[in-house]
Length: 284
Ligand code: IMP
Ligand code: MG
Image (cartoon, rainbow, N blue to C red; front, side):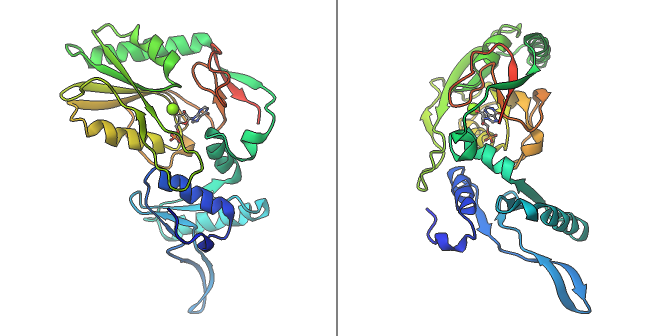
């Protein structure tokens, strides 16, 4: 729970803090100011990033308030990177933030009428080709073993179904479901349906549809590791790298994808579009 909501300058910061809490990511609000320019020995310009994510050693600046400030903030962030090369800082644009909210069915994007698919990003053929390649890669890497493919409901359904048929080894499969963020401040990410299989000593491959901020993945990894697996690797069809907040090693990646909202081949927008045989960009 966030005790004092008055510390935030803007409701979007509070909402963002709630999302971080949901994923159990520790944060501090505006804990440090960076001097950017001196006038003699007086500080003439400085910047105080909105959030510091303690465990990730990452500063975040939200530019959700005024678009007119974006250029200025961009310049300040560049300056911090220049003057303090050891400091990790990222700028989160209004668009990024709205997309994060839309994933959970909130915010202006979720409320807007969607006009449908803008264009096809990956055709059925391109996807099949890539799935074949991932399947053979996994088959040779896990030779002599019996990997367990773990899927998190529901986005991976098409990918998992195709991938397992391209792995020429005995494989086992199991599924879990996690509770999505609902905007409730007291809620944290949890498992609404856990795996049924005992994973201890198993070689587990977590099969994901898409990695975005990485917050879900980081939670899932910790959860799976706690089951004493012999090994754990990640296989994701899509990687939206540019949006990453929590970095994680991902062994198998199908496609690096642009910062767009994607649907089809299992991916949904408010539970729609999952059954499209291709991956399309949603008009926003
Ligand atoms: P993360 O925790 O931000 O990495 O979110 C990952 C999850 O968000 C994925 O498993 C998807 O369910 C969902 N997601 C992220 N990006 C998209 C997208 O472009 N379309 C549909 N779902 C998405
Ligand atoms: Mg998912």
